[in-house]
Length: 330
Image (spheres, rainbow, N blue to C red):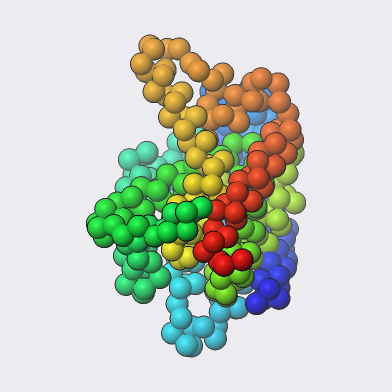
């Protein structure tokens, strides 16, 4: 199984690299460039026009790899990987719609916040119901570290899970604000799920996690500072959906707290900033939100932010691993 994960990683990386070589010139010809917000750091203006929707690169690599590796599982009627892939692809489609509207309008506003929230919530609930019907999740909430599962009313579990998914997906979206940042912090998360799937003998999840890791590693070649392409909401929502799909299909929702801590901190920094700004009639806690922009305005380079955030993501992935060691009987 470890070989399958490693080969999935390599194939996904190869396909994603090839897609990048083809996609970047195409997006430039189509003038599908990023519009930089006026309220952002002034030095980001130089990134104006950088091709966006680059998430299509690793989405293609992951999709091809997962389907190719699991053809025999489909014939056996094992469809968990298709449900996971469809879930992530639907989130990617929401992001694509948002990116397309931004490019079409030549602005930085796509779908409204309400439209995105409603679509994300519908996708989350649909996926949860599908996994429940397929028998991959139960309304028993697994508690990391304590290695116990707490029975819950099914409706309450679905409500908690649905809002957790939307929160994590939006956390991924908000983290994508510095060259390579979301790619870097998400790579340790994918590796965590690959090792967890290997230890728990979950081949399908392992292949998906390996493909995700390979696609992200390949995208980083193009996305590291100075970025030649941005993933856009197409890529960030797909990544968030993939991380949630892995956690849910392994029936350990709460592992998203340690492994996705960077996403959570990013969302909280934005909520705290907006709430305090409104309550204090214009005052701010951070120089700018989300938090990585605060560090930018404090003088940190994009490379330093990338290294520090990715290092912390590795640390939180290790903490997440320790939190589930009892479940995997290591």
